[in-house]
Structure formats: C-alpha cells, structure tokens
Image (cartoon, rainbow, N blue to C red; front, side, top):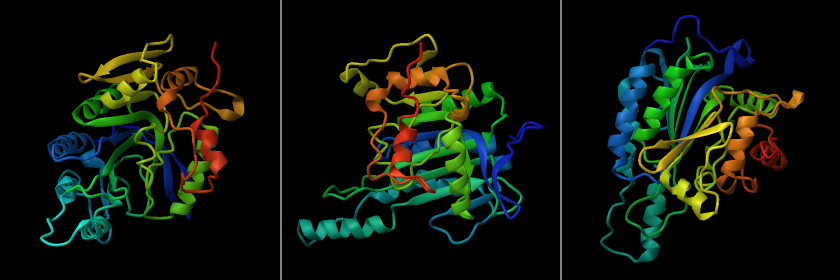
Length: 331
C-alpha cells in the first residue's frame, strides 16, 4: 500500500540538506525472549507489514550484509529466521568453562542483530516510513540455546489515517508473543548516516514534546523487559506484565480518560484518549490521558536511569526526568 495522497511528515532534523530524523506515527513492540515458535509469528507480521508498507520501502540496512541494498521482501526473512540461529552446537568434550566460552563465541555473531528498511529517495536520508527489527543477547549461561531479546519498530507519516493505523498495529500486536509495546507519536531515524545529528535532534524535540517516545532500546532491551520505557496513545501489555501489575496490587482498571481492552486472551491495550497527543513542556501541556495511563502502570514503568544510555547528549538526570515525565497529578 502506498501512503495516502498528500500525507507526509516534515523532518525535524536536516543536515546538509538531507533529512536525518522525522517525527512520525509509529509502534514499538518489545517481545518475550525469542523462541522457535516465534518464527511463524514473525513471518506473519512481516507479511502484514510488507502488504501495508512494502510499496514504500526502498532501502535496507542489515547487520549481516555490507552496504545499503534495495529493499526486498526477502530481507524480512532475516527477521523470522533469526530464531533458528540461537541454538548452540553440542560440545563433545569440555566442562562448564568450555561451554560458556563456546556460547560467548557464538554470541558475538548473533547479538546486536539489526534488519532495517525505510523509504526515501536516497540511501542517506531518513524517511517517515520505516520498519526495523533489533535483537540483543545478555550474559550467556549453560543453556543449550542463547536467550535473545527482540524489538520490532514501524513508522508511518504522522498524518496517517488513525483508524487504519490503529487496526493494523493492534493486529500486529495480537500476532506476536508480546512483552509490551507503545504506539503513537515517535521518531523515524536512519542512524546509518549522520547519527550524531539525528540523535541530537531527537533529544531536543523529545524534551519539549512529551508525547513522543524516543524509542531508545539498542543495547538496553534487557532494561526495558520488566519495566516499560513509556506509555503512549496505545500501550500494549502482554500477559506477563498484566500479571505483574496484579501482583503489585494494581490490577488494570479503566479511568475516565483511559479505556482498557483485551489483547488476545490475557493481554491488554490501554487507550489514552481518542488520538495521539504531542504535549508541550514549554506550555505546561501534559496530556492528561497519558498521565492517567502512566499512573496505572507505574509499578512496571522504568524510572531508574542508572546504566542507561540514550544516543545523543542525554545525561543520566535527563533520562530519569524523561522516564518520569508523566508523574503528575491530574484532577
């Protein structure tokens, strides 16, 4: 499907005449630890995304391939088949030390795995239309299979019809073994080119416009596994985090501004109002529905910035302030 006529997102960062970051409408899905059963699910989602955005995706950036080739549907097979590469070979000799050494060696070629596709006229520029998969592996153990955290991210122009966006991202969320996700305003970047300028523009924009998810997950998906990074217009919670809220004594319950609907059999979606809101810190405009949604998931929302690194000029205090930006009282 092509972008509906007349819909575009102006870039919020340009360097030497080339767009480096766009404000966009998007969804970021954090997955449960990847397993063999996810291959079919990821392939199903790839089909959904390609039928939706494939006509607009022009360029690929694959961590396992040199250069920036023309985007193809087969590029997405690197996402679904990634789960096959997490099985470790059996060692005929050696004890625990040898097994850990072999696992760490195998991890080198499998962690920080990325498949990224985007639109745009040239390989160097960012585009509001993008699709990405990221996977990373924490400290290894003696299990016969590497444990990998995975994230899917997609973006479209911020003027995309909301009904269409809502239907598609909820269908995608329902197809995944989801840990949690957030959909609404975010950023589409292309860190293959001018990443310093792009990350600086995200920093400046996000500190003012509170309703935008910075989408920081590279090298810290583990940090955002048990604690979600943010709420957004839509906040998706998988069964494990719905249960975690209940155990924390805060089972989900709708509020005047936030509706709750089921996601699959045991997950949930929080709807913070009827449409995404940008907010504006300079004008003290904190989206009230987002503030209520944040209060509802506070026990599972990240607030400690220790050891976190966001690309760009973020300090630890900046990160902590951003994580907790919706901790406000709403009458």
